[in-house]
Image 1 (tube, rainbow, N blue to C red):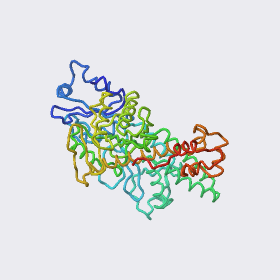
Image 2 (tube, rainbow, N blue to C red; image 1 turned 90 degrees about the vertical axis):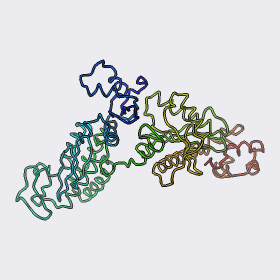
Image 3 (tube, rainbow, N blue to C red; image 1 turned 135 degrees about the vertical axis):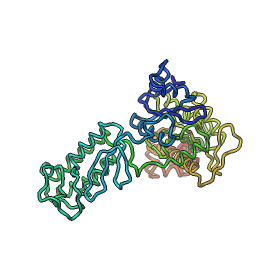
Image 4 (cartoon, rainbow, N blue to C red; image 1 turned 180 degrees about the vertical axis):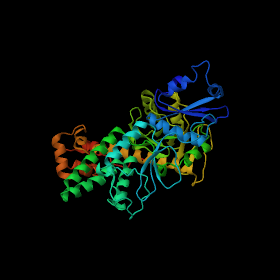
Length: 481
């Protein structure tokens, strides 16, 4: 089984005989890391020896990079509290950048979060990322570093220190900067640390334009250089890979789904599938991805059917899953912990057939029927009916609705390709002269598509047979909903 693990970053979850998680770890390569546990005849640590002897099963969650694996590992350990995870259960080991809760805040690097009203940004999983951000912030958004107790409106020093001379502080201690201006800089820095470079750049662009208009060219040049530095930070991905505390996702729906569906692991990633077509024409299958309960549109995929002809939603669903996960296997992309099919038990049956053909039948799959919001599970005759306020059901509905929306828009995009000039020229019997006559008389291809065959045939050199071809090729009836 371990030989089938991807040689990619991710998190592995070791389960005991009762199915509970006993250890959770991260890996740069899941295959190599997990294999290492079983390549030792004897362990120096009795703890490791006991861990390996207690393993009954191992599941994995693929991530895009090592940083994501570290963050996910930490959160899963907090959620499941595995017996053998002592280190992270005792507290955070990754540093945060803390913006203190003062009239004139400071930035502090800390490994411990406290309920002191401060803003904590992180955790940072690579020290290099943290150092890079601190260098950028000190150069372009420096805050005071002294520990003076400053109060707005009160001056503590007659003259500012050397840091003010070096442009490394606004010197609020000496009254060189008011609280409003200082807070503006704090807000700028918070955007940078949160990874919102585009928002910050827009703010600075407005100030740069205002400075240039006021002929404050030195300030405008400084803002220009700051904006360029921000884009360098974005390209190098120095910002924290984790969201701040206030932006953390609520995992309640995921935990509810795991409990309701009897999943071995938290459905950290859910793939949703749907099909759309117009009377069997231009059939499109789509896959959407939700990570930690949030849609990730960068991972969406669409498939124009190649092997299915006419109206056949079931085989279209099968082809979509086969092509989707065949690509995942070939490129070692992350696999989901749950697959959701828009439809009923028959669609689910064909989806399961696709998974079996690829050797992926261990991935849980369910179908959600819209009419009564019923959840169909493999091998069960009766659907699962949850309360409409159930958080797990609400999450599945969001996945289903997003898959449906993406399927409809994808189908319309494919269908609307007809309404170009080439769409008429591709019809057998049509030439540039006839195309020009139709367009000059009716104005647009979309207008022609709404005409009857008799109206189209009224154009010189377009008879009833050709008019029928045109009408069929430009059919714009609504897609299957």
